[in-house]
Amino acid sequence: MDNVLVTGGAGYIGSHACKALRAAGFNPVTFDSLVTGWEDAVKFGPFERGDLLDRARLDEVFAAYRPVAVMHFAALSQVGESMQIPGKYWLNNAGGSLNLIEAAAAAGCKRFVFSSTCATYGDQDNVVLNEQSAQLPINAYGASKRAIEDMLSDFGASDGIESVIFRYFNVAGADPEGDVGEYHQPETHLIPLILDAIDGKRAALTIFGTDYDTPDGTCIRDYVHVCDLVDAHVLGLKWLAEGKGSRVFNLGTGAGFSVREVMDRAAEVTGKPVPCTEGPRRAGDCTKLVSGSKRAEEELGWRPQRSNLEEMVADAWMWHQSGHYEK
Ligand code: UDP
View 1 (cartoon, helix red, strand yellow):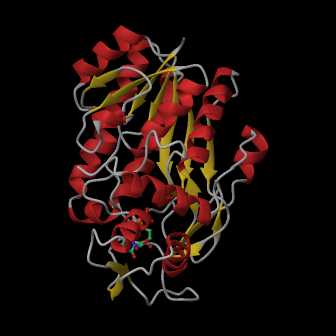
View 2 (cartoon, protein in one colour):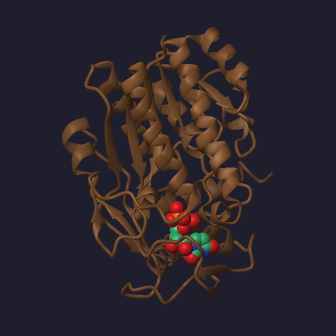
View 3 (cartoon, rainbow, N blue to C red):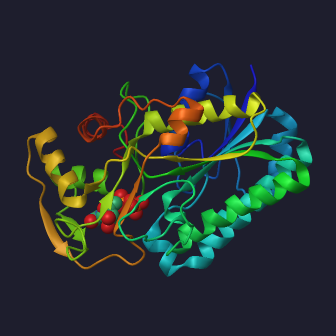
């Protein structure tokens, strides 16, 4: 069985990716510092604890497993925090990724599937984005991810690294079989916060800004089911194995939902109201981030199965109620 090194495999998206990799016949080797991940989410392959800033540890893991590819999820991902402590994002995301890419190149591991983000596009006047849209990030998180994309391209030219870069829109939902799900500490993402507010774990949801230039005044995002998202990653590996070379793909659904629409849907799915208050805008937030997935569908053959809002909220709610992560 081929090994795939999964950085951030103990996190939300990484743990779902490990499940999909195992189902596709790979051995996912999780490399995770556990700064934001959870060891009990590593269920589908070996676990190697380590920090991307520790080059010696990376070299050790590459030598031990000789992975055929790297799936690189490990990153700090809070937009708001990245505006307050940008250095943390540049060091861990950009610096850590540089170490990882250099370690992979030195070990002769030339295939990368990289977790990038729509935050690299920035705020672009209510357009539907595609892969050619300009990348003009408005927060340090997005800027650090754009820098990693540039690194992969430069190491492609110098060392023959081939990369499939996925720019995600908003990832949501959970494994419908309940093996893994979303748990962040602290939680900052909209859907889990709504569910927490609904069942009284949190006083109320604060809506960050009601004066945006959108029909109901709240921000619009494009939500993708985590299981569909990780399926695309397995297709990305196949793409690289077939020698198709480096490529960027957006992963969205083309449907945008406002914060209020997500709240309404959550109220319907759970049958309970969402306690909420209105607050000011959060620094670094874009008005609208929506993308089609034409390229991923046409070229990779990606077919999202569960990415409708109702199913995403229902799967997240099931996970939420399972009590797995009542830490
Ligand atoms: N949001 C909100 N209240 C919260 C958390 C998020 O109104 O407590 C909004 C946020 O401003 C954004 C959307 O929900 O418009 C999605 O935010 P999230 O942090 O889930 O993802 P992001 O778009 O930042 O990647």
